[in-house]
Amino acid sequence: MNAVEQYIAQFPENVQRIMLKIRTVILNEVPDAEEKISYGMPGYYLNKKPLVYFAGYKNHIGFYATPNGHEKFAEKLSVYKQGKGSVQFPLDKEIPYDLILEIVKFKKESSFI
Image 1 (tube, one colour):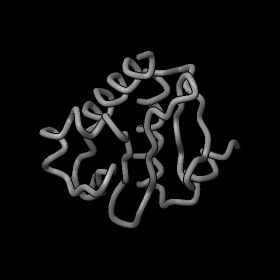
Image 2 (cartoon, one colour):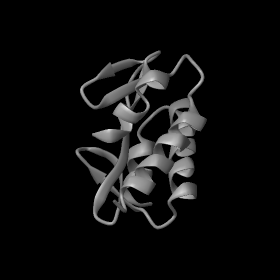
Image 3 (cartoon, one colour):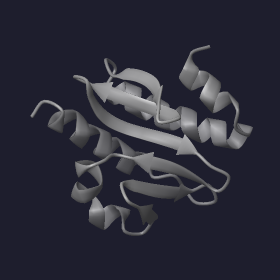
């Protein structure tokens, strides 16, 4: 079990399922991304540049696509609670996997710029 799998395994099963699906979305889109624990959470890097991070919490999944991922998708993310460089996807609502995929695609394309 790698470090990201260990991180995910510490959460309740319902949260694990969500995090595993987010992980799959990311790795399916960017199969050559470097996956590691960074800042205490799963992080994904391409060309030595950060793509996205996510983290599990009691009531939400934190998603981090700083700096330009949040700016580019500000309108779509506006329905979610946000902090500086973060967005919270509540566990009691449907997780926007399609939006996560859009953000990952954008970050992947911008990592080559």
